[in-house]
Image 1: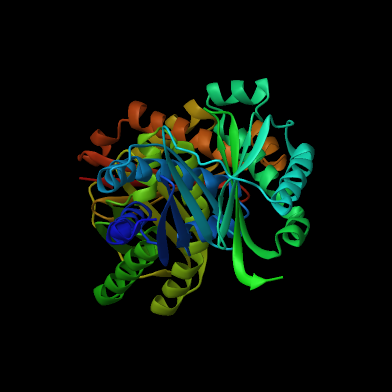
Image 2: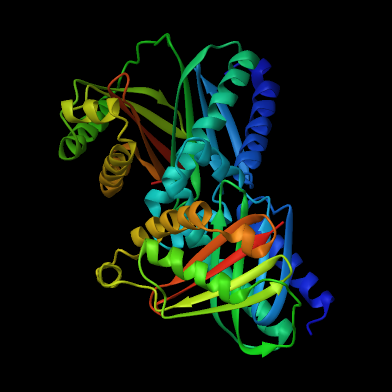
Length: 231
Length: 225
C-alpha cells in the first residue's frame, strides 16, 4: 500500500460510513479501508441497526440478510464510482459478507484485471490449501483451483475457483438470490466448523470468517481474519 | 377528557421511538383519544432502508419486517400510554399504507375516557355500507361498532368476521399469509367499492385495517380530509 494513498483511504472510510448512515439510519462504529495489490477491503464493526436487531431476535435471519443486501447493493454502486475516482482504479466487482454474531462485515472491491504476482508457497501454505480443499469437498463441488491471493499477519484471502454446479448457475441467472444466500451461509458455517483445524496449521487464532461468491466468474472468495493472539 | 399536553407527550414519544429504531422519524404523529380508543396517526414515515426495498418492489418483505419491528415497539408505547393515562391497554393494532406513506397505532383501553364528538355522519348508514363491503369480501360481521374519534377520524370495530376457511388457515399457521392477502383484498374493496365520501360528506384520505385473528375481530380507521 502506498503511503500517499493513506489520506485518500481515510477519506473513503469516512465517506463510506456516512453513506451507510444515510441509507441504514445508523452508521457503523468503525470502518477501515485497506488497499492491497489493486483490491480494496473495507472492514466494518458494529453495523447492526436497531431494526435489524429486532429481526435477529425474532430469528428472521433471511429477512435481515435480504434487507441488508438490497440496501447495501445500492450503497456500493454509489461508493464504487467514488472509490474508482479517488484511487484511480477502475473497480468493477464488489462483494460483501456480514457476520451478525460478531457484528462485523467485510466489503471487497476488485477491478477487471488484477496483476497477480506469482506467490511462492512454503510447505505450511501448501498444507493449509490442502486442508481448505478437503473441507471444501464436504461443502461444495471439487474446485478446479485454489490459491492464496493475500496473506498478511491480519488476514488471509483464498480464491476457490470453478465451484459452481449447473444448478447454481441456473439459479443465479434466474435471480434466485434467496436460495443462493442460504447456500453460502451453509458453506461459511462449514468452514467455521473446521476453524480449529485451520488455526493449527496457520498458528494464528481466527477471529472471523467471510465467504463471498463471485457467480459471474465462478469462484468463492474466503477470508480468514486473524486476531493478534498467536496460538 | 385527556389533556392535550399528555397527548402531545405520547405523540412525541412515538416519533422518537420510531426514529431510534428505524433511523428516521415520521414527519408528524398525532394522537387522539375518545372513549375506549387511542389512535396515533403517523405521516411521512418510511425508513431509509425500506425506501430502497420498496423501490425494488419488495413491498411484502418490507411489510413483514415492519410488522415484526412494530410488534416489538408497541409494548413500549403501551407502557407509556398506561402510565400517562393511568389506564390498562387491553388490545392494540397497527397498520401501514406504504403508497400514502402513513400509518396508524390503535390501542383499546380497559375503561372509557370521557369524550363526545358532535358529528353529522349517519352512523347506521356507515355501518350498513361496511357490512355490505365485508360481505363482498367474506361475510357480514356479527357486530359493528362505530366510534368517532375526532371530526376527521372514525374508528369501526367489526367482530365475528372470519369464515371457516380463514379459521382453518390460522389454525394451520398461515396467519401471516392470510393477513397480507386480506390487507390487499379488503383495502382494495373498501377504497374502490365503498360509498364513504357520500356518507362522511368529506374525502377519505386513508383507510387502515388490522385484525385480531384469535379474537375474530378487526378494527378499521377512516382518516378524512
